[in-house]
Length: 420
Ligand code: NAD
Image (cartoon, rainbow, N blue to C red; front, side, top):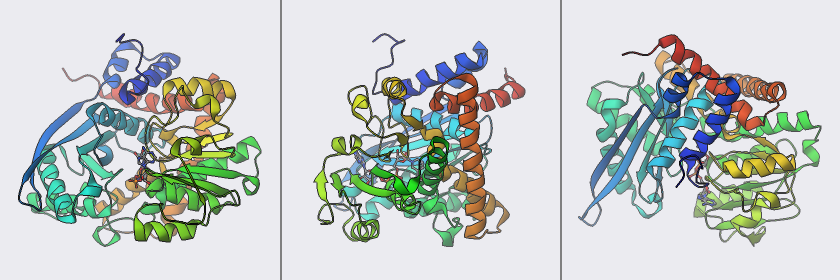
């Protein structure tokens, strides 16, 4: 493969393609460019785990720190059967740019374990988690690397992580991880934070474009932490959510879905199948619906050169990380779709993770209103900064967000100098 042509489906190459465009527009010097283009540290471990039937299964796990220039590495842990190292690298780098876009003092990291959490018992999940944490313990720490949930992990997994780390360090260290249950030092508003951030930037985009949200329709791909909450939050703006999906397919109702009933159904059954308030549609169809707002909130590479021309939404708010490929970007730009890029759109999560880390370190906890007000302020300001950058440099919102983030990381990298 020609190294200059990114393969459309490789997220790390897609990240580098966008980074290169931003670096070019910023006139970034070659040294800093070379440093920021690759990951600082990568750990791969094998995790032997005793399964419930007594057999031993050996899983593969990763932790990647892309940059710690602006602060401890920060980023989630993904449990999925198709997770791979390049995906984790890309996710780690996206965290670096994202934290810089919203200007929170973190670098970027990400972790993953190749496993199917839906096919494992609670005990098996706990043993995988504790073994994974023990395997990467040396690079973790409240001032080194602070994980969080991502696809396939949740507050319970974070609680086991916090417990394993604290046991080994012989101290109570809740700031080692965010996205924890409230009783363990979690922050009010963290569960809703990413979806609420998606709503806030979509609201700002509609204002910017002169769209009345009460007249808008939306489709949401993904019905997990980000997707379902984004849908519920958009509804608070008067947006009519016509469709939502999970990995098994979607539901569509031209009059709008009953999202509270869907939430209750998901709590009980963990999947959308069997909900009778809409007709079934595929995950491919949901992306091409004639709606005003599209929120891809499931996974990477769902909008590509193959389907980007068929997208009808005026606004795409990227709840997921990397849902549009670099080739899709070009087509969406030509069509004039207003894309709110992932490193801005889903940054509400890491913003409240930052608040959680601050609260844990102070051992002093904020009210939900304090969390929400501070987060809204950051999201609204960051949206304005990205749109302003796009206008000044005549670039897409995505490249503008990269420019904003990359420039901040470049500045600290330069100031710290190269330790030789
Ligand atoms: P989750 O596991 O809670 O939910 C994922 C949802 O997507 C589920 O409904 C699942 O069925 C569906 N899904 C999975 N694969 C799919 C596929 N191939 N096609 C269609 N649907 C599919 O995960 P989450 O935390 O909601 O994360 C979703 C995305 O948002 C990921 O890209 C993640 O990196 C990103 N993200 C999450 C957070 C957070 O705070 N949780 C923050 C920022 C970004």
